[in-house]
Length: 284
Image (cartoon, rainbow, N blue to C red; front, side):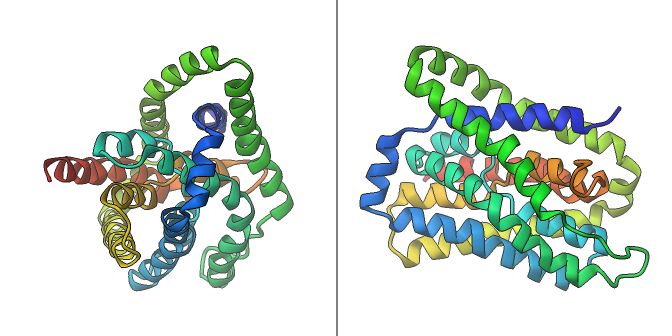
């Protein structure tokens, strides 16, 4: 079974659900006090990819995993981050806005960021040269991400009652859908994952712990409120694994589902780590 036929529907549904949760009033409120929004975007779009590059170099990752780690780092806007922010007592409006903006911005930044590891790994033995079809990637991102977000937003504006009911359903299935997706890829690549679980587990945990630490320090440095700090930590830590898997396994882009292995492990571990974080901050 070609897993792309499972990835695409899940990603579309998650992005549609994100569109349902958008509120223009939240954008206007955050625009008046943009410090938290800017801090979150810097953490998502600059700090995490930079950490990923550093970690990939430190661990001397094989080319396939090197690119896969950078891929997950440049796909922010995790589908569960809004729920996690709510449970943690964070700023849900900030969480939704960051998820939406980062999802839209990365449609154009992913090709730029990914070209760096592709150039770095092009000479690696047993990997060869791989090209990034930028045009196809942009089209895929627009079709699978921007269009569903726009449709969800329009549904909220035109049929608010139906949108609320739909949003409740999608909110309940978002996490199980992501775990199903990770589980399917885990089964397909269980041998490769088993052989590299210690290495990739260490890499992913390093990324998660460092992203939490750095985003916490950055949030404190700009003197954000506690609820905003919680949200930024969660948003920077939670990545859009479905998007990373879609890019890796798409026949139009890389057509190599093995590139998605770091995203699969990240999807599994990020929920564990951030659930622990949420449990800790709720007690304080």
